[in-house]
Length: 88
Image (tube, rainbow, N blue to C red; front, side, top):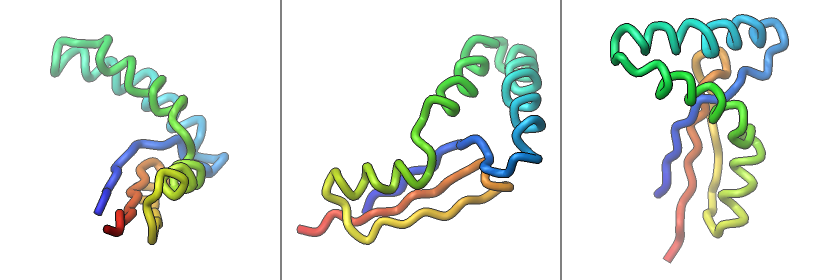
């Protein structure tokens, strides 16, 4: 079984601006204070935006040979959990 937990931009257009504010401004600021590494936390939102959306990732997992692929979105659709099975 393969499980993938990823952050994803919420598909809800109302939450989009709040997500961008939080992820692009607040998270790097807090990261600079707590972890003393703003760059690591500034990279995270950019990688999230560049990552395939949940439906596309599920399709890529199927193309890679995984079966019974599904995903669920959590935290107002800002997190996606994908599951797939590699059959012997």
